Image (cartoon, rainbow, N blue to C red; front, side, top):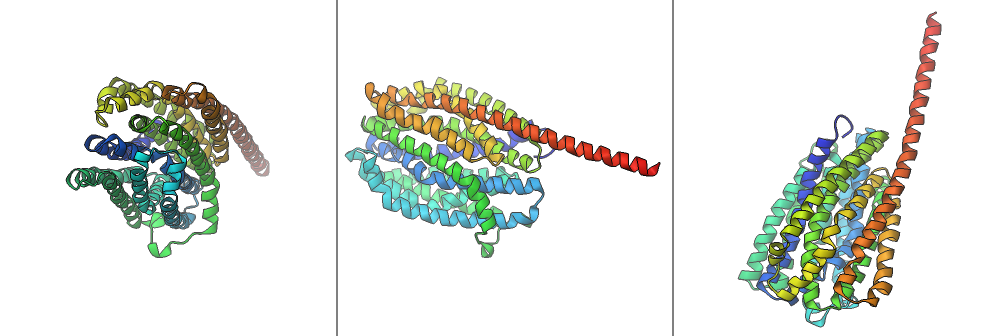
Length: 463
């Protein structure tokens, strides 16, 4: 990551990461597809109505896993490999503590939270059941996220992908078995998700336990070290808070969607699973940008950091536009995998028309936010996202949407806020980058002057 051409390395690092995220989303979509095809719209809505609530509760701890990635990347860039082992054990210990906290929280708040969101009465019982079973597997979900972040900080995005493929295949097989053979409906897909998450989390732990050197994980040495905890939290908490605030705004939007009934919930959720695939691609390049930038920033190579950002942006946006075009062309068969209900299909097509067509816009601020986090400026993208996306969404849903209450009017909030946030994020990044490049130039000139003075001194001494 610190030497030589970047484009091929960035692509090869991002590819398994993108495939991992896409597969994870496809496996989540399999839950929806199985209940949608083999049960009824209420069961499909029960699974779909949980996504924003799950994201809200999980975002903080997923953000902290980004902190682990940056901390380890910085240590590698600085050549401080003696500190990496303690950072690895701190991150894994933190993941287990986080998972237990999330599990208990999810079990307690499941039903009250769904009622606050206005989930329809014909959906809430099944939605609560799904959410509570899902959160029983939360410790292994956080373990997977942190262990994957550690491996990515090391430069390995392939093995987390392999773990996810294995878990995803298990998830689909168990979905079909529990729902079709056992008739378990919503409980079946939730249980399948928990078991598959146990597999992916267990595999990434096993990978670390088989590592040699500073990345080797010894369960007997698990302990949270204050130095590394502070580093992880300094980067991870702003990223996590950003994700949480995003989720709060999405919970508000989901509440508005819930007011249109089960068919709208099911249709919007089906289409949302499609645009999540696009997000997975962009997020892969954002995470790649975090990792490459963190190592190069740790090595004080600012010009190379700029190159990482520009290559990630060009590749990410280019591939995403191609992917979105394919989704739009084949939207009919794709939605048909989730449902054959014409009313559910109608609502899905509304979201595709207004959201998926413009989804590439959000990729720009994700990648730029990743570059800022890699430069140890995690608070900046969090604040920009808070103001440019979340605050505007809340204002829109509360005061603009009521003027014309239709599903199309509601979801227009997404491209509007993406555009605002992208403009602000890139403007701030370019300003910060300019200052960093200026400092690097001054530092280079100072070193050159010292070297030149030393050379003249040697020459004079020799004379």
